[in-house]
Image 1: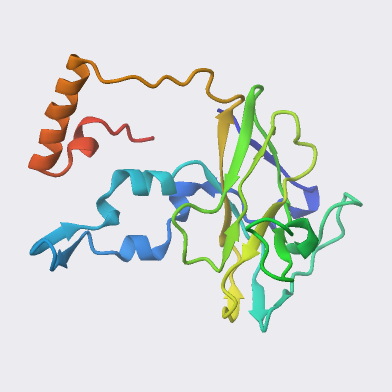
Image 2 (image 1 turned 90 degrees about the horizontal axis):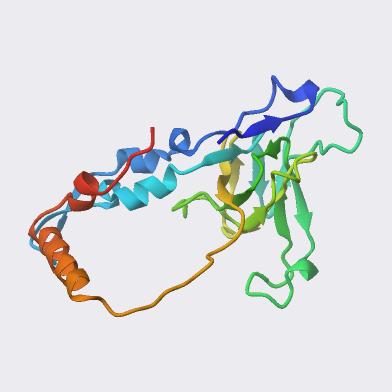
Length: 234
């Protein structure tokens, strides 16, 4: 899969570039202990740091990064980001804009009269024919003070302008700086179209035996999925 990012020529040396998600893992994951004592189990047990599905989800796709420091104080957002003249007249210059509350009124996303944050895009994203772009909140990143709203864009066709990323600001008590390079959106290509056929059926005798065999291995010791089933990306 070739993914092409483009930006205004004046910004090519100024913007943080999208990075593979595995290059943007948070410090807390690296610093976590692989095992912790559990009073319930009476022994040390593995933490999520040793759970391949948990970690693999965090390393899937690529990250769009915040282009500059954003200061947050008393519900106000400020930045000092002087940009050079741009080649494009209709291009954003601010890292953030907003959606008015009425755009999410009546949904579970509504937070009283609070506006939704919109992370403006400084990169266009082009995918190969037949592929769409899924954008989600950086996976398992509950430490971030916002929650990105998921979206799916046919980026094989819509790629002349950037994709903006709306989010809810969830940490009302956050005071400080959201630094340049903070992951704001985790993205990955998905093939166009959904499931063609969903089949629900009882397990055959053979499937039941397979279930019992694999379940017994899992109960006998750790690492069964990681050693026998996981296919690590390059």
